[in-house]
Amino acid sequence: MKLWSISTTVRNPERLRDFLKTLKEIEGQPFNVENQIKYQILLIKNRFYKPTHIPSEFIPLWDNPTENISYELAEKIFYLQNYQDPAMRGRQSVNPLNKLGFAVARESLGKIEITELGNNFISGKYDIGFTFFKSLLKLQFPNPWSKDFQEGFDVIPFIAALHLIDRVNQKFSEKGLTQTEFSLFVPSLVNYQQIDEYVEKIALYRKSTDKKQFFYEFAKDFYQTHPNEKQLKNFYEYGDNIMRYFRLTRFFCVSTSFFGAEWRIDIEPNRKIEVEQILRQFSGKALDFQNEKDYLHYIRDIDLPILPNKQAENIKKIIEGVLTGLLQMQKTHQIQLNEEEKALLAISYESFSQSELENLLERLRKILTKFSTIIQKKKLINNANEIQKIISLLQDSKRLRKIEAYQFEKLLADSLKIINDEIEIKPNYPVDDVGEPISHAVGNQADIECFYEKFNAICEVTLDTSLYQWVRETQPVMRHLRDFEKKYKDKNCYCLFIAQKFIKTPCIIFGHLSNMDMMVPNKKLFL
Image (spheres, one colour):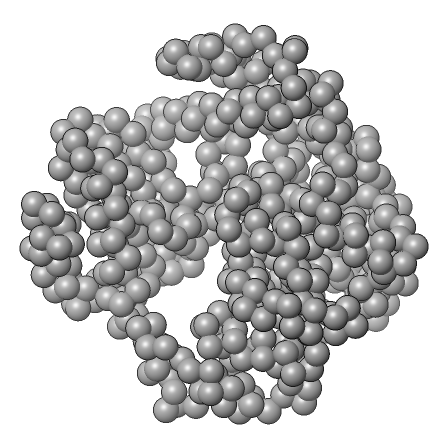
């Protein structure tokens, strides 16, 4: 038996958009051997894939993002890898795009096609949570495309994981799964009929006094052989990869005691009613398709599978649940409401159309995120221990190197909130229902926007400590400041740039550009 996986090629789901944009360059062409190789070369050319072996004479060019890599050079680097099957690299890179319904790129199916969901992912038309929710619902084993996941497989992993955690929560007072539990029991859950059996295995794991030995024996039973180190490591690598994809849907919440600690995953409590509806409709069993044509239709149709919330009565129940939660939060934490919020919390929606109900639910969830952020700040500024943890982490360069970009952005946003003199601190990273980041801030905007009584500001953060920090940061940062200033003309605008380590060159460039009217009108101060 083998573990199921979403992608061993692309660890971070955010990178899939770059892979998809590159595939878009050859859309309409056949995905034959020639174009499989071409696709991988284009990924190298666009710096979306870094080969293991780059000749020393090309490393300075690769590391310098201001220099373009020609197709000819990318091709040379590609063939220097001496792959036994060069075309296979392109097939592996496109595999997660096919799996998740973003593209149809297979040699036997003619021309490369980006699906409607894939095009919306590229354009950003849909919220990232909705995009990955729809795509993960389509991921199932077996399917007509995955010959490697046939015997013994019968599962829609996303649904099966929801069922597993839901049943764990019904059985135990300790809710959700630890990182180790998730990594052990979710990638190995290859058949929906195993769910109850796995709940019992989790009970045994929690009772075991030697968890390391339990892990080994479980892996031995799963692989039907003594597992080697790589096979044991795969549980954790696949589990971490799967968690990253699942978290983006906002149906799971992931928490840690602090940055860098082991994470814990649970069903998002604010989606309880919606999850219950989904679990009643889907068992986790893979859908049956008569042929590849039927499967292709399913992959291409953005409206499939049809979800419970497409029925008016079901979405009304979801809205009722969210409203009840909001009113309780507002009362418990004495949150002041503006006029729009008062109207929404008292709205009568019985006669609303489906689209009006969906719009209302979206607006209510934005209020939920706002309320959660307010509550988090109240806890933060009155918690001396949390403040000291943040200070200690900011002073610990070794620990800082282990955190991810979105965690660093969250850390700095919280630090600004602790000062408690703002009108609003607005991070631009996508968040879950309670305001926790699920990814880093997207491009073309500042990492954090800050609004104060007498001025406004942006905060840009980076973990980049390389010599090319000045290339990657100076122009985007100044462009973000310029755009921010155009948008908010009523006050002076400033920029706070924070890095784990400053390289001399960007400091000089920032100082020079801050005195140029072209970049920063009225010579606004740049910090």
